[in-house]
Length: 157
Image (tube, rainbow, N blue to C red; front, top):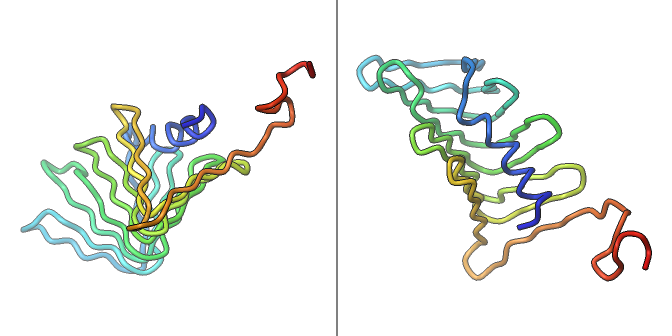
């Protein structure tokens, strides 16, 4: 994986280790005190630090009054700074330090793009796995900065 794409993935997921409070807005919320889970529906927006996730439905799970993990469904859009992404489903796992985009998963920044059926990033390991659909392939596009070419070193010689 190139430095550009690695930087994109690390920048996106570094805040998933989460320092600030989580704010969730939605058209409706149902909280189960018995199971320690909340369901948010209708135009859901989760924000923490600079990380923003929008979806149709979000289920959050709590342990000891702390967010443990969350499952997002439908029209997933994520944004952090200049990095954007989309998927059919997303799973934020605070305990495992992992962000997974599932179903038509895409991350992009300034013309660079990585896509596959599933993109999983392990925050603590600084490791990303991009998996294709069965029998398919993954794809990465890297925009040239115009300064050098793989066939011609910088400086023109």
